[in-house]
Length: 102
Image (cartoon, rainbow, N blue to C red; front, side, top):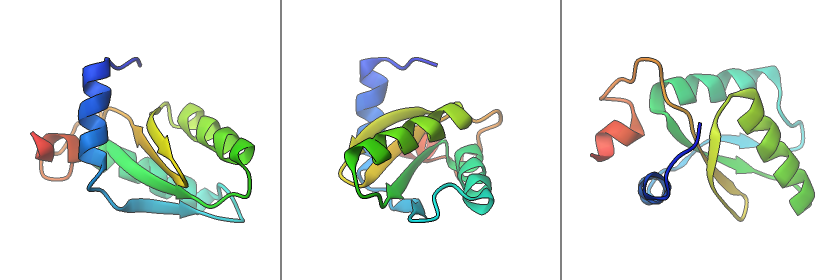
């Protein structure tokens, strides 16, 4: 999945007002966190995740593994926050952050 620069810019502006749905700390990607990320991507398409890591390399590796595992795309990574997007199979206009912003 590749997004155009215009889509990325629009998603960044939508993501600016979002709160983190998931916070990943010392335990890393547990099964409960994986379930919650998948649920949030299915319902909201565009989500913000807070990563509490000690180094940039750990954050980058964790971001890449999340995007690969959930076939999502990292839209933005600033500080401890990442913004990821995955198209829903059946987006709900009432829950989707992308649909609600239009």
